[in-house]
Length: 464
Image 1 (cartoon, rainbow, N blue to C red):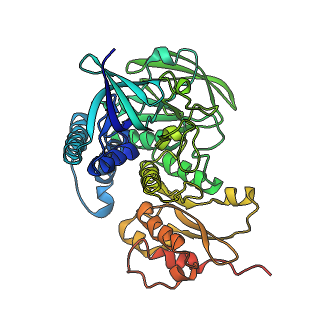
Image 2 (cartoon, rainbow, N blue to C red):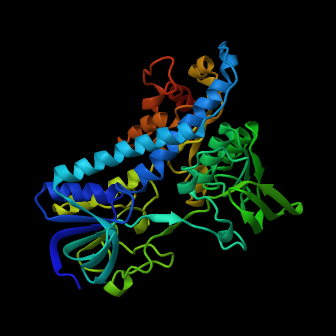
Image 3 (cartoon, rainbow, N blue to C red):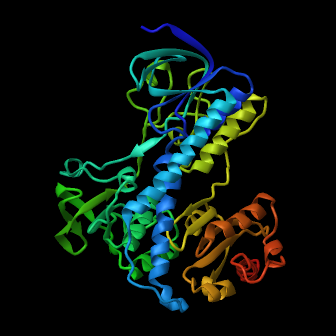
């Protein structure tokens, strides 16, 4: 066995929270190592958030050019060059990887490329990508293991070699007919993007509606937008068998409310959730407990069950967003410095980058009812926001929940620039401002955020 090397801190995984923690500790003079199996910087800059939004933007450009006539602009025949789409995405990823390598160099944190296994408490064996092994002994151990796409146990599906988000972002061709399994975040973004590139697209969702974590009116609007672009939706539908090979020809046997049928396609994308990368690497043997779903069991300070061991990001069961992993870093950093920071009651904003985007912060109507919270509901169609009259982007609506103390407890928007408008509302929520602050604010005309005046002007009076 290799001779043990001692470190103040070892971080397994170079995702958002882990890398920022490593850079922070390295700059503070601690001897720090980060073990990364493949993706320098984690999934976000390589195979997830940024690459997908890069290609979604290209799809949006294709859509806008196709609509050019609406705006009085004459264009010629439109074609999509997926090789150039892929090249643009890869160039961005290359620049981001270079940035990360420079940060490791500048902070003094050591990046070790290899596969980690915990062989004893605070002892990590690394099978190096370029051969050989190293044995790292850590004073403190941080686990930033991430997740991977789940592939349902449908007969024939694994043998069909389906696309996941990783392979879908590496296509240099336009699928003839893309079948998407799953009507959640990832599935909807890819479905709309490839429809705009020119694919025929079918979404198969076992539930009764898309985006099922959202309120029904939100799901209905998402479905309307996708169907208007020609995406076929098969809801309350189970996949019973898959025959063939993705990238060539597929036959998918499904059970719909109307009975059994078979659909044929060229490619199949699995977007059916994620599985944490926690099994089979020695965690439980080292006293690091897992939950029934395979996530690392942590308290609200992200401390694992083993001493001087922390978990960060998705593997700790944190909301599966890069910005929440970054906040996990802040929680650990501040507590290491004597603070008392917690993950309890965090405000989790998110944005689904379909077009128009769907953004939410705080609770939904459905969640308010489940928690017995009396909330006043205000809605405003996007066509009532004058900015949309100038852009012809009037789909969707804004919705806000206000409690009896006049505080905003939830905001949802499906509409152009939803993520940016949501940030305005989130800031008001963080500051504890009453909804009247946004109702009466002087907001620039004509902007999307100006719609907040109208939205909060629609808040019903208090009951009784």
